[in-house]
Image (cartoon, rainbow, N blue to C red; front, side):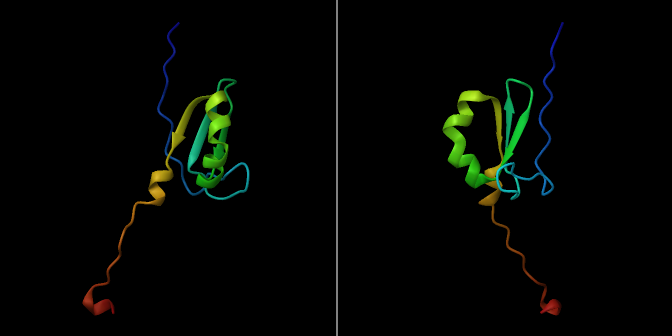
Length: 77
């Protein structure tokens, strides 16, 4: 039997932290087959313990530091 692992889908604004309900930026896949979602704050807070029980950690918290600057066209000002 061959096991194929599919890449996890990107987290969206609909994915919420299991601890506080904020937008999730970390998905933790457990050996039991379950998963937990955490905001960046709680992901950092629980990271040492999560690493002990996780099979995979999908960390998208880098999106928080990606800056995009919107500029208006002259006729929109």
